[in-house]
Length: 139
Ligand SMILES: N=c1c2ncn([C@@H]3O[C@H](COP(=O)(O)OP(=O)(O)OP(=O)(O)O)[C@@H](O)[C@H]3O)c2ncn1[C@@H]1O[C@H](COP(=O)(O)O)[C@@H](O)[C@H]1O
Picture 1: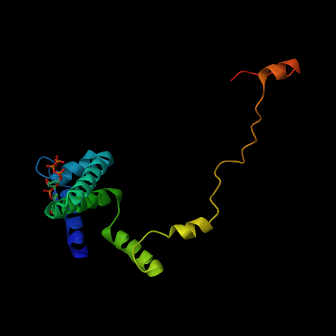
Picture 2: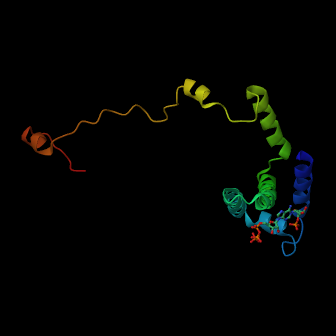
Picture 3: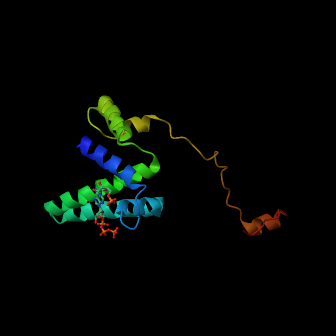
């Protein structure tokens, strides 16, 4: 399977220099990342819908379109298929199967508090403050 994707990736790289009028890939690459991302998302949704509908043949066809659009997006983003296979191998070595970091290990890491500790917010009663001579600005 990785050979097929590698051949497709090379064909996509070649198509970059083709006439957009005749090459869909050339047209897609020139359309920019937004267009490529939109097509990729559309294909992913088509695969999901076909799977929910139990249409195995359509899942196969749309999966090929999804992989095609993903490969085009990789090419535009400077990602080589080997970069993805290497990441999957790294995960496999770590966890036995290609998956994301288990959430349990994430819980161990103290979440980075990007926000400074917030000052306690005191509820100020405007009338009481005025009686006490404190200026209280309405927000
Ligand atoms: N592997 C593919 C491939 N898979 C899918 N597609 C195109 O992606 C479309 C599927 O996406 P959609 O469902 O959105 O189809 P669509 O709605 O009709 O297309 P648009 O409305 O987006 O134009 C198909 O109609 C195909 O035209 C592909 N187009 C090209 N390739 C390969 O890419 C290389 C470059 O081909 P060119 O683009 O023809 O230069 C060659 O190796 C091709 O075999």
